[in-house]
Length: 112
Length: 490
Image (cartoon, rainbow over all chains, first blue to last red; front, top):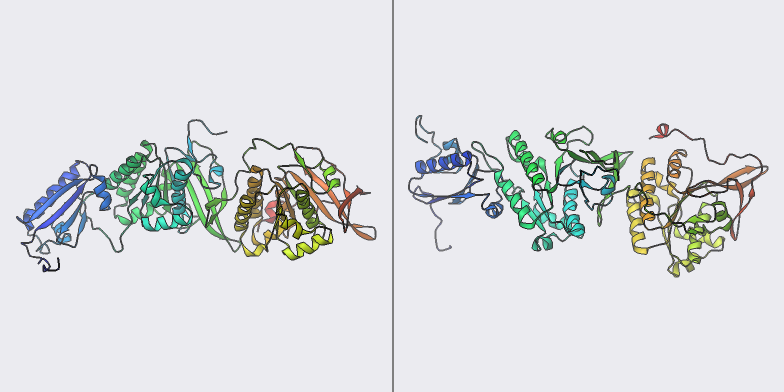
């Protein structure tokens, strides 16, 4: 790792997210949809999303000490921001996940 | 038992607690253990699991919101519990919900605690847990903004544990020891089973008490019970076993060390008897206590002698004056003397030390010379608890026990209460006779046998104590008129 410079936080870097849900509830589906939508908006073509069902993989949830679901964790680039909830306020979720340009207010009517 | 058959119980294994709980916690239910900071909640939760594994081979899951698992392992280690080994054996599992320093997860939109529930269910299944401890509810609430949501989720969790037939202990915080409810307000009303741990200062002394507020549909003892946190034994609830019915009573009689006194109590005391001797200072209590110890020595049995009024040196000199050689008795291995001033430790600590000595030395007899000295450190209730607790320990082992006491500084009422629970009560005191001060002895009560009702003269010389003829005339030997206990409180 030492011979590589730190990855620059440009929009071109690949963002990886892991989202934990608990079962296939409406809330789980809404959270997943919201995450995909905000990634498509802010990180078109440079993101990966992994969905983990804590009821199916509790050991993984234990490892990451997850309590509340849904929760999204930014796996890369670090730091590993976490946001709990169904992400119904997408621009706020994007801001809390540290996505590029997410600080700007989203224009009225924008499909976020 | 008076227990209704529908409520199964699970023994906690926590020393003394199962006695006041009349058989342990309601099985397959959640019990809320509520207390202020430092009241011993976490220890209760930890011991409930550890003693379940070590005593009953019941695996347990510990859900920790407060302390890190590493810290809990270290704390448990000092009590002799090797959690890491149990984890390796698949008998203990942590669900680590403790907070990283500075960690605060923001929320956007709605959520639930589904992952926590899934983790707990997973852990329970993985090791086949019979017990779960969750420490503490309050920390879950501080972690999330939506209090109603958290409450709903926690009830759902408790419901899940119940349906899995898990017996669980859930701790929660109280802001004050006596103002009624938990910090979040409603838990004590919602849970069926509630235990409160308190840590209060009363009479300039720190007290820990445990109270079972409710066990729905199951009996338990009411009121607050003293407990202590022992560095080796953990939680020890003081009044143990004594109040439980005795399965068997000894019919074998042993000597008090004085043949005339033996005759007065109907031919010696029963081997499992607890004897109380009340007497004024210089009245001959310590002599009677030494003769009681000597009777064990002559029978080739071990005696443990705890003196609160005198040093070992003073005791030895007194004994020599009556023809008894404590050094020889101790060297034989049949006598162990422990002389401590009552002030050096709390009454609870004295109890633990004596209990440990009993376990270690396995005496046939026990003498506690001068329990009234303990009153300088305790309330009358504490003194009573001390005797009750020790009574439980000695009866279980059929140790013939003698307590001696002066009439106490607050009058005689606490000692009279103690007399109400001992098997034999003797009074030995000075009498102002015509022109002389003499001594007299009487038997106030003997449980399970007839006794001499006469007040007899006592003579003390260099060969010991001699009980003589009935005292002529009418005497009032019992120390003072009974005092209503309520007038004597604090």
